[in-house]
Image 1 (spheres, rainbow, N blue to C red):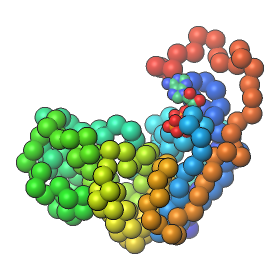
Image 2 (image 1 turned 90 degrees about the horizontal axis):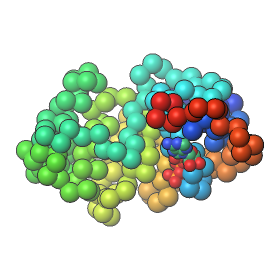
Image 3 (image 1 turned 45 degrees about the vertical axis):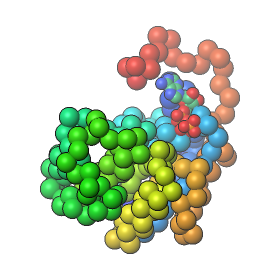
Image 4 (image 1 turned 60 degrees about the horizontal axis):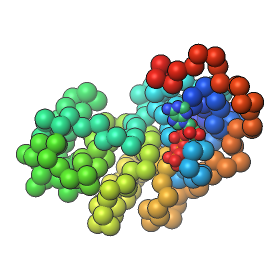
Length: 210
Ligand SMILES: Nc1ncnc2c1ncn2[C@@H]1O[C@H](COP(=O)(O)OP(=O)(O)OP(=O)(O)O)[C@@H](O)[C@H]1O
C-alpha cells in the first residue's frame, strides 16, 4: 500500500488556486523531487500535504501522523542547546533516540551550543536532524539544502538514503542534484491552475487569517 496517495488535488494560496488536477502516489523507499518555476506552488503543495492548510479540492490519503515537514524556517528554540532542541522534538514525537540524529548531521561537537549561537548552515543541519527524531515515514522538504555547504549536502543525502532504506519516503522541493539516481521528478508545470479574473480573490480576503 502507498504511504501517500494524492488524487485530483488542488491547492491555493491567498485565495487563488496555484496547482490543480494533481495525482500521484509515493511508496516506501521512494523519493519524488518537486520542480517548477518560482511561485508555481511548491511550498503551497508541501504545506497542504503537511496539514498546515486545507486542500482547495481533491483527496490526500495517508496514515494519520505520517508526515514530517521541514519548511524554509528551521523551527528551532533559540535558547535551547542543540541536544535540548532534539530532545524536545523527540519527546513531542514519541521519544526517539537523538544520538543517530546528532551523528547523521555531524552535530555531536555542537551538542551543547545554544541554537541562537549556530551559523545559518549549522541551524539548517539541526533543523534537518529533527526529521530523524520524528519517526515519521513521509518527509516533506522545502529547499532543504539552503545554507548547506557541499559536505553537509552529502550528509543530508546520506541521511535521506538511510530513511528511504528503512521504508520511508520523501517529497523534496529542490533545484540541486542530490545524487539520488532513483529519484522521480514531479514537474508542477502541467498542473498550474488556469488563469483567473483579476477580481477572483474573495472580497475581504486576508492571507494572515487564511
Ligand atoms: N502570503 C501569501 N499571500 C498571497 N499569496 C501568496 C502568499 N505566499 C505565496 N503566495 C502566492 O502563492 C503562489 C504560490 O507560492 P509558493 O510559495 O507555493 O510557490 P513556490 O513554487 O514554492 O515558489 P518558490 O520557488 O519561489 O519558492 C505564488 O504565486 C505566490 O505569489
